[in-house]
Length: 165
Image (cartoon, rainbow, N blue to C red; front, side):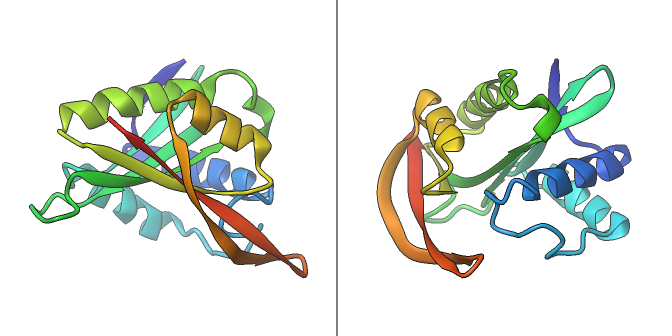
């Protein structure tokens, strides 16, 4: 498995993995809710690559992209430039193969190199596999965003999790 930063040529495969991850119903967007267009997403990748405190990492197995981790930070010196927000997704055919662990390990090295101090994310309270991964990687639950999401006619809590490097 190779973990690397995405490049513009990865756009179509990354979009396919994002769409697949959204089908899990554990992501902020429900399946088909947002339109991921090639040109727009290519610009997103380029913007990420031009921001020293943001990145789009991909997990690749035999030239196939099977997972992604987006880390978004603020490169402009400010009161929040020490932290970054994380979004991660793994293709359903590849879950349970330590891809998330590899992505987060790569993130840790990158974040320390960039001088980051805090990593943060949100996760649906019923996403037990995601919560287990995040805890394994050193994240802790800081609080609960009560009734934060409305999914299939029911309100859902989210946990706010963070890791101090």
